[in-house]
Image (cartoon, rainbow, N blue to C red; front, side, top):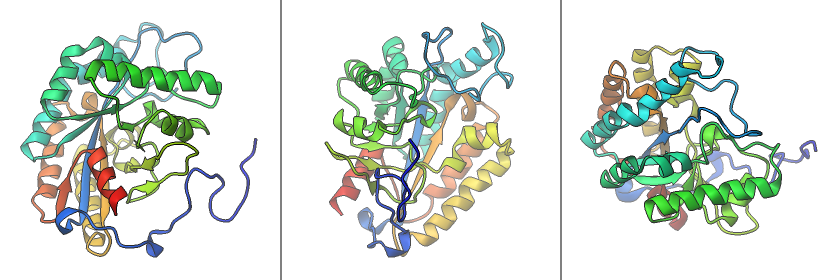
Length: 302
C-alpha cells in the first residue's frame, strides 16, 4: 500500500518535529552531549534457514558474496567475537565509556563466555534480532515477525538474566509494523531510526517507545566499508562531528550514538584511530557517556 501523503510525515510512527521549535533538552550536570557507543555482536550463520533474508550488500570478507562456504566472510566477521570485541572494550574502558552491546540471539545462545564477559565489563545488552543472516523485512507476516521478536528477546533474557530494554535490528532491518510490535513486547527504545540528534517519542498503541537515533554516517561499516573512507579521515569525521554537536549542545542538548562493529574497528591497524577520537571527545567538559537506557530514562523525565 502506498504511503499516505499528509503534512509532515507519510506515516504515524512519530510526529515531525524540527529541532528549532523544541523545548531545550538538558543533560545531567549541564552536559552538552550524551555519548553512547553501541557495539554490534552479530552472528553470521553458515546456512541460514530457508526463507530468511540476508542483506545482499552485507559487509565482510572479500567484498561480493561468494559461493558456499564463503570462508573469508564468515571468518572475517567471526574475528569480532574472538578478538576485536576485547580490544574495543579496552578502549572504551580507558576513556570511561560504558558499552551498550547489541547482541543477537544466536550470539547469546552459543557464546555464553562472551555474554559473561560483557556483563563483567558493565555492558548494557540490548536486542539485535536472531542473527545478521535473518533480517526483519516487510515480506514477513505479522505473526512471523511477532514470533521473531519474542524469540529474540526470550533468548537474550535467558542468557543474560534480564529482558533487554533496547533494540537494534540486524542491518537496521524493520517492517512497517516493527515499532508497534517492539513496544508490545516491552522494548523501551529502538536505535534503527537515524533522523535526529536527540531522542524522541514514538507513537504506539501499546507500551511506550523512544527512538535513540544512531548517527548513520559515522557507523564504522557504513563509513569504512561501504563508502571506503580512509581510517585516518574517519578519525577526523568522528572528531569534527563531535565538535559541531558539542557547539550546538550549548544551546540545546545533543546525543551522539556511535555504532561500531568489532570485526572491523577492532582490527589492530584501526583501533588506534578510534582510541584517539574517543580520547579527544572525553577530554572535553560537558560530555556525559552513558548506556542507551540511562539516556532514555533521563530524556523521558524531562
